[in-house]
Amino acid sequence: MGFVEPGVVTLDPAPGTGTYLLGIIDHALRRVEAEEGSGAVRGGARSLANNLHGFEWMVGPYAVAQLRFSRALMTKGATLPPDGTRHRRKPTIR
Image (cartoon, rainbow, N blue to C red; front, side):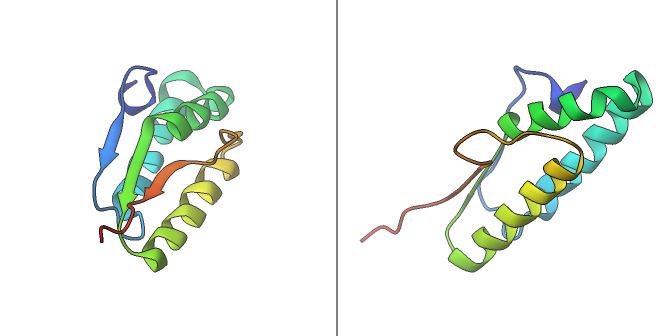
């Protein structure tokens, strides 16, 4: 199942507002629905919440991406990990 498989991790080192990772969510969940049925989408969304990682420098795009990821996954029935999605803001180097 590609991106939904437990051992497949995707890292986007500069996600901006998350367009690429959101495309992965859309593609992967459409594939899950086509191959396993609509009942499997929730589990696929839950797997994606753990498999997708993004690291963003800027606060604005980070906040937008975090909201977009959370909404996209929760709309499909995913329960997010206790510490949220794996999208992280890179620390400022001083």
